[in-house]
Amino acid sequence: MRRRDFIASLGVAATWPIVARAQQQAMPVVGFLSSRSPAEAASDLSAFRRGLGQTGYFEGKNVTIEYRWAEGHYDRLPAMAAELVAGQVAAIAAVGGEPSGLAAKAVTTTIPIVCSLGGDAVKAGLVTQLNRPGGNITGVSILGAEMGPKRLELAHQLIPRPLRSRC
Image (cartoon, rainbow, N blue to C red):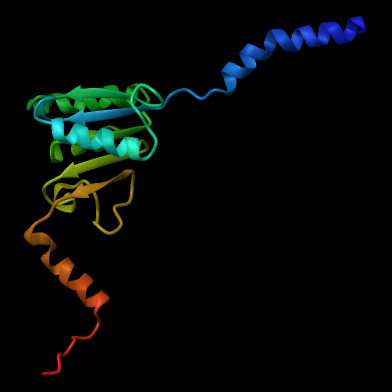
């Protein structure tokens, strides 16, 4: 082996760990913002972790979760949401109703926000319309009576003309 080849291979060997480390991507961080306490949000948290697992993400293995718990003190939510944004999370899960979603929406227009709430996301000011939320917010809204007309519209689209039974 010539001297020049030896020095080149030694240089490659010395820089290989640096190159390998640079190619590894950092573990993504997801923010979990809740207006409730950990005990009150246990079922939401369990479902959240289960959903992440179904998509191949496991806390501590390939994703980190930053938790913020307001424990009913809604006035804390804006600062907590700002902390998550400052920590450059990849996404924010805002649970526990409108206050969490609104706090997250107020501090970022670029980080994806996933909300869950029991009311109307449009009336709350989270999205402009349900079928195309737009912006960086999506999620689940559990509506009761407000969804009646939408369900009828969907049923009409699926079955455009009434079925008549022959008796």
